[in-house]
Image 1 (cartoon, protein in one colour):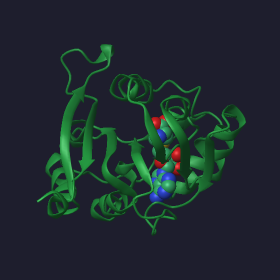
Image 2 (cartoon, protein in one colour):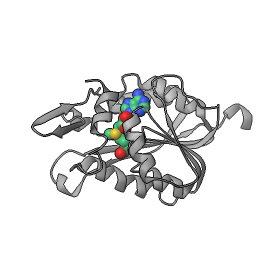
Image 3 (spheres, protein in one colour):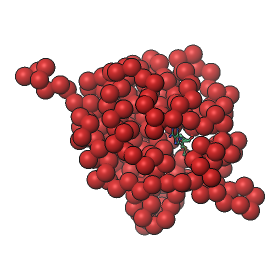
Image 4 (cartoon, protein in one colour):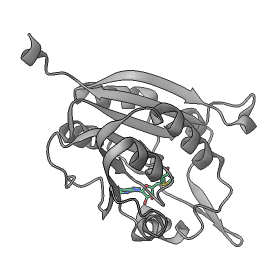
Length: 215
Ligand SMILES: C[S@@+](CC[C@H](N)C(=O)[O-])C[C@H]1O[C@@H](n2cnc3c(N)ncnc32)[C@H](O)[C@@H]1O
Protein backbone atom coordinates (compact mmCIF):
# COMPACT_ATOMS: atom_id res chain seq x y z
CA UNK A 1 0.00 0.00 0.00
CA UNK A 2 1.39 3.45 -0.81
CA UNK A 3 1.99 6.09 1.87
CA UNK A 4 -0.95 8.32 0.95
CA UNK A 5 -3.51 5.49 0.97
CA UNK A 6 -2.07 4.10 4.19
CA UNK A 7 -2.54 7.41 6.03
CA UNK A 8 -6.04 7.85 4.58
CA UNK A 9 -6.85 4.45 6.05
CA UNK A 10 -5.15 5.15 9.40
CA UNK A 11 -6.60 8.66 9.76
CA UNK A 12 -9.78 7.73 11.67
CA UNK A 13 -7.79 5.94 14.40
CA UNK A 14 -4.46 7.78 14.34
CA UNK A 15 -5.23 9.95 17.38
CA UNK A 16 -6.73 7.16 19.49
CA UNK A 17 -4.18 4.38 18.77
CA UNK A 18 -1.48 3.54 21.34
CA UNK A 19 1.58 5.33 19.88
CA UNK A 20 4.48 6.33 22.12
CA UNK A 21 6.40 7.91 19.23
CA UNK A 22 3.50 10.25 18.40
CA UNK A 23 3.09 11.14 22.10
CA UNK A 24 6.81 11.80 22.65
CA UNK A 25 6.94 13.94 19.51
CA UNK A 26 4.18 16.17 20.89
CA UNK A 27 6.01 16.58 24.22
CA UNK A 28 9.38 17.43 22.68
CA UNK A 29 7.88 19.81 20.11
CA UNK A 30 6.26 21.74 22.95
CA UNK A 31 9.60 21.76 24.84
CA UNK A 32 11.53 23.07 21.81
CA UNK A 33 9.03 25.59 20.43
CA UNK A 34 6.74 26.41 23.37
CA UNK A 35 8.31 29.77 24.15
CA UNK A 36 9.27 30.82 20.64
CA UNK A 37 7.00 33.51 19.25
CA UNK A 38 7.14 33.50 15.43
CA UNK A 39 5.41 35.08 12.46
CA UNK A 40 4.50 32.81 9.58
CA UNK A 41 4.71 29.05 10.16
CA UNK A 42 4.61 26.22 7.63
CA UNK A 43 3.82 22.78 9.05
CA UNK A 44 4.57 20.03 6.57
CA UNK A 45 2.95 16.63 7.10
CA UNK A 46 0.54 18.06 9.69
CA UNK A 47 -1.45 14.82 9.84
CA UNK A 48 -4.44 15.05 12.18
CA UNK A 49 -3.09 18.33 13.54
CA UNK A 50 -1.54 17.03 16.76
CA UNK A 51 1.06 19.83 16.80
CA UNK A 52 -1.01 22.47 14.97
CA UNK A 53 -2.62 24.08 18.08
CA UNK A 54 0.86 24.76 19.51
CA UNK A 55 1.94 26.36 16.23
CA UNK A 56 -1.27 28.43 16.15
CA UNK A 57 -0.43 29.65 19.66
CA UNK A 58 3.18 30.70 18.98
CA UNK A 59 2.72 31.77 15.34
CA UNK A 60 0.86 34.67 13.78
CA UNK A 61 -0.37 32.44 10.96
CA UNK A 62 0.05 28.77 10.18
CA UNK A 63 -0.14 26.94 6.86
CA UNK A 64 -0.56 23.22 7.58
CA UNK A 65 0.05 20.85 4.67
CA UNK A 66 -0.45 17.13 4.17
CA UNK A 67 -1.14 14.90 1.17
CA UNK A 68 -3.63 12.64 2.97
CA UNK A 69 -7.13 14.05 2.58
CA UNK A 70 -8.20 11.73 5.42
CA UNK A 71 -5.61 13.10 7.86
CA UNK A 72 -6.39 16.71 6.90
CA UNK A 73 -10.13 16.07 7.37
CA UNK A 74 -9.45 14.88 10.93
CA UNK A 75 -7.35 17.98 11.59
CA UNK A 76 -9.96 20.34 10.20
CA UNK A 77 -12.68 18.75 12.33
CA UNK A 78 -10.67 19.54 15.49
CA UNK A 79 -8.89 22.78 14.76
CA UNK A 80 -10.86 25.95 14.14
CA UNK A 81 -8.19 28.53 15.06
CA UNK A 82 -8.68 31.46 12.66
CA UNK A 83 -4.94 31.78 11.96
CA UNK A 84 -4.61 28.22 10.56
CA UNK A 85 -5.05 27.32 6.87
CA UNK A 86 -4.97 23.67 5.78
CA UNK A 87 -3.79 22.61 2.31
CA UNK A 88 -3.58 19.24 0.61
CA UNK A 89 -0.17 18.97 -1.11
CA UNK A 90 2.58 16.44 -1.72
CA UNK A 91 5.85 17.74 -0.30
CA UNK A 92 7.90 15.62 -2.71
CA UNK A 93 6.64 17.93 -5.49
CA UNK A 94 7.59 21.63 -5.81
CA UNK A 95 6.02 23.38 -2.81
CA UNK A 96 3.20 25.91 -3.38
CA UNK A 97 5.09 28.46 -1.30
CA UNK A 98 6.61 31.84 -2.12
CA UNK A 99 10.35 32.38 -1.57
CA UNK A 100 11.29 33.51 1.97
CA UNK A 101 7.63 33.43 3.05
CA UNK A 102 8.08 31.65 6.40
CA UNK A 103 9.85 32.22 9.72
CA UNK A 104 9.47 28.64 10.94
CA UNK A 105 8.95 25.34 9.14
CA UNK A 106 8.13 22.21 11.13
CA UNK A 107 8.34 18.65 9.94
CA UNK A 108 7.35 15.95 12.45
CA UNK A 109 7.43 12.20 11.77
CA UNK A 110 7.20 12.52 8.00
CA UNK A 111 10.67 12.26 6.45
CA UNK A 112 10.87 8.50 7.02
CA UNK A 113 8.32 8.35 4.17
CA UNK A 114 10.34 10.56 1.81
CA UNK A 115 13.23 9.15 -0.23
CA UNK A 116 14.92 12.39 -1.32
CA UNK A 117 15.94 14.50 1.68
CA UNK A 118 17.85 16.98 -0.44
CA UNK A 119 14.69 18.10 -2.27
CA UNK A 120 12.91 18.73 1.05
CA UNK A 121 15.82 20.74 2.45
CA UNK A 122 16.07 22.75 -0.78
CA UNK A 123 12.37 23.65 -0.70
CA UNK A 124 12.50 24.44 3.02
CA UNK A 125 15.52 26.68 2.54
CA UNK A 126 13.88 28.49 -0.38
CA UNK A 127 10.68 29.01 1.63
CA UNK A 128 12.44 30.36 4.76
CA UNK A 129 13.45 33.95 5.27
CA UNK A 130 17.02 34.61 6.39
CA UNK A 131 17.31 33.62 10.06
CA UNK A 132 14.18 31.47 9.77
CA UNK A 133 14.18 28.08 11.47
CA UNK A 134 13.49 24.52 10.40
CA UNK A 135 12.51 21.98 13.07
CA UNK A 136 12.73 18.32 12.13
CA UNK A 137 11.60 15.57 14.49
CA UNK A 138 11.97 12.00 13.28
CA UNK A 139 12.05 8.42 14.44
CA UNK A 140 15.71 8.01 15.44
CA UNK A 141 17.74 6.10 12.81
CA UNK A 142 18.98 3.82 15.62
CA UNK A 143 15.36 2.60 15.94
CA UNK A 144 15.15 2.20 12.18
CA UNK A 145 18.33 0.09 12.16
CA UNK A 146 16.47 -2.22 14.58
CA UNK A 147 13.51 -2.49 12.21
CA UNK A 148 11.09 0.11 13.61
CA UNK A 149 8.86 1.86 11.09
CA UNK A 150 5.43 3.53 11.04
CA UNK A 151 2.71 0.90 11.22
CA UNK A 152 -0.91 0.52 12.27
CA UNK A 153 -3.27 -2.27 13.15
CA UNK A 154 -6.79 -2.92 11.88
CA UNK A 155 -8.26 -5.97 13.51
CA UNK A 156 -5.74 -8.75 12.99
CA UNK A 157 -4.00 -6.98 10.11
CA UNK A 158 -0.84 -4.86 10.53
CA UNK A 159 0.00 -2.37 7.78
CA UNK A 160 3.63 -1.26 7.51
CA UNK A 161 3.93 2.08 5.75
CA UNK A 162 6.76 2.40 3.18
CA UNK A 163 9.78 3.96 4.89
CA UNK A 164 13.35 4.99 4.07
CA UNK A 165 16.31 5.11 6.45
CA UNK A 166 18.04 8.48 6.69
CA UNK A 167 21.28 8.49 8.66
CA UNK A 168 22.16 11.43 10.90
CA UNK A 169 24.87 12.40 8.41
CA UNK A 170 22.24 12.49 5.61
CA UNK A 171 20.28 15.20 7.48
CA UNK A 172 23.44 17.19 8.21
CA UNK A 173 24.72 16.97 4.62
CA UNK A 174 21.36 18.00 3.14
CA UNK A 175 21.24 20.97 5.51
CA UNK A 176 24.79 22.06 4.69
CA UNK A 177 24.11 21.85 0.96
CA UNK A 178 21.08 24.11 1.35
CA UNK A 179 22.36 26.98 3.50
CA UNK A 180 20.88 25.70 6.76
CA UNK A 181 23.03 25.84 9.90
CA UNK A 182 22.50 23.35 12.71
CA UNK A 183 21.54 25.14 15.95
CA UNK A 184 20.60 22.17 18.15
CA UNK A 185 20.51 18.39 17.80
CA UNK A 186 18.75 16.36 20.51
CA UNK A 187 17.94 12.70 21.13
CA UNK A 188 14.84 11.77 23.09
CA UNK A 189 13.59 8.79 25.07
CA UNK A 190 10.04 8.07 26.18
CA UNK A 191 9.85 7.10 29.86
CA UNK A 192 9.04 3.57 28.66
CA UNK A 193 12.37 3.44 26.76
CA UNK A 194 14.75 2.90 29.69
CA UNK A 195 17.99 1.19 28.57
CA UNK A 196 16.83 1.32 24.95
CA UNK A 197 18.17 3.44 22.05
CA UNK A 198 16.70 6.92 21.68
CA UNK A 199 13.22 6.96 20.11
CA UNK A 200 13.36 10.38 18.45
CA UNK A 201 15.94 12.74 17.02
CA UNK A 202 15.31 16.44 16.56
CA UNK A 203 17.27 19.01 14.57
CA UNK A 204 16.75 22.74 14.75
CA UNK A 205 18.32 24.45 11.73
CA UNK A 206 18.54 28.12 10.83
CA UNK A 207 18.62 29.65 7.36
CA UNK A 208 22.02 31.23 6.97
CA UNK A 209 22.40 34.94 7.06
CA UNK A 210 23.55 36.01 3.61
CA UNK A 211 27.24 36.52 4.44
CA UNK A 212 27.72 38.76 1.41
CA UNK A 213 25.06 41.14 2.76
CA UNK A 214 26.86 41.63 6.09
CA UNK A 215 30.43 41.61 4.72
C1 LIG B 1 3.24 9.86 11.21
S1 LIG B 1 2.22 11.07 10.46
C2 LIG B 1 2.72 12.50 11.38
C3 LIG B 1 1.65 13.54 11.43
C4 LIG B 1 1.97 14.70 12.36
N1 LIG B 1 3.10 15.48 11.86
C5 LIG B 1 2.25 14.19 13.74
O1 LIG B 1 3.37 14.39 14.21
O2 LIG B 1 1.36 13.60 14.34
C6 LIG B 1 3.01 11.35 8.88
C7 LIG B 1 2.22 12.31 8.02
O3 LIG B 1 3.02 12.66 6.89
C8 LIG B 1 2.16 12.74 5.77
N2 LIG B 1 2.97 12.58 4.56
C9 LIG B 1 3.78 11.54 4.23
N3 LIG B 1 4.36 11.75 3.03
C10 LIG B 1 3.91 12.95 2.59
C11 LIG B 1 4.12 13.71 1.41
N4 LIG B 1 4.94 13.27 0.43
N5 LIG B 1 3.51 14.91 1.28
C12 LIG B 1 2.68 15.37 2.26
N6 LIG B 1 2.41 14.67 3.40
C13 LIG B 1 3.02 13.48 3.56
C14 LIG B 1 1.15 11.62 5.98
O4 LIG B 1 -0.01 11.79 5.20
C15 LIG B 1 0.91 11.73 7.48
O5 LIG B 1 -0.16 12.57 7.78
